[in-house]
Length: 225
Image 1 (tube, rainbow, N blue to C red):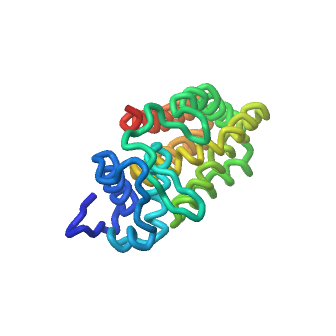
Image 2 (cartoon, one colour):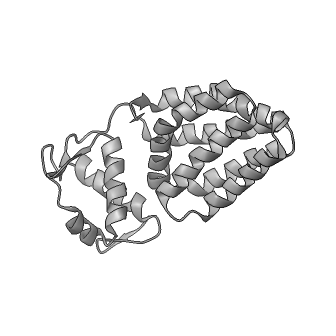
Image 3 (cartoon, rainbow, N blue to C red):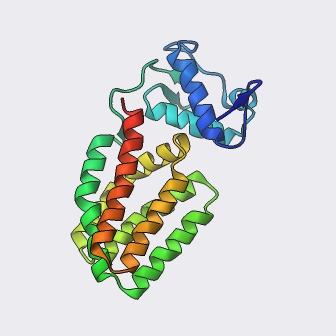
């Protein structure tokens, strides 16, 4: 990511703004208790839109650096990142551990048991993800894809377990895609999973899901240190 003369380039804008804000906070330039400049001022300073600025601030909040107080603005609450990342109150490591136990076997069963209609739905979701232009829209369809894979397993308990984790996983997914540019890699990994399901290869489907979750875990590990 590049910053020239104080203005963030459009490519990877959210990640660039997030990293700059994080640097300002962790360096102490913004101290604990400080009220940060308003969205309009910050967006102008970085040369980005207010939605991009809000997403970067949201990422800072997930790290435990800032807190937005209704009607008052955004305040610095810590100059150090949380020791453990949490999403909707669940530790990132716990989420990954649970996903390995549930989504890997679900992908294998989906390869064995999916219906033509379910397979068609999975390919439709891949196309929808590829066409998504909004970060939150992509996250929503990402959740739909993982839930649809579980549904194709034919196991209602696995489907319910995946659906029940989506709130926390949606927060995690949005955070990673905004700050670590995971979207393109995720799209490729998702396609590998669906292709293995299409081939009715349980082993390849489990492997593809395993690789996807390992890439997510590696990305989280780089942050959660």
